Length: 110
Image 1 (cartoon, rainbow, N blue to C red):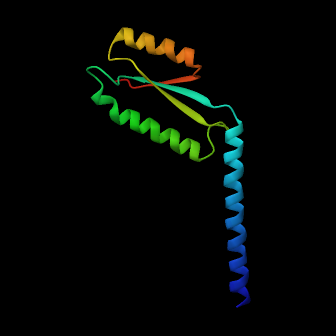
Image 2 (image 1 turned 90 degrees about the horizontal axis):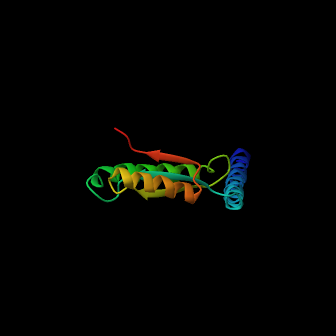
């Protein structure tokens, strides 16, 4: 009986610790500037349909990274930039990424 109470108390302490840790990590992430990554690919034009899975995968990856505390304590923002399925659109998207202050670019290549 005493062992069950001790185990129950330990479980409660662990649950409280997890709750406090989650709040602390969320607060820490909120106070850190975000890390901006650009995903440059076609959202319009001839190649748009092919990129839907890549967009969803990138969004899911960023969601998982942020759920685990971000990147070195910083939340990650994904900036999806349409290259309009053209070389000139890709150039414009790259310039847009620079203007947005991204530190890295993700792209789909074959």
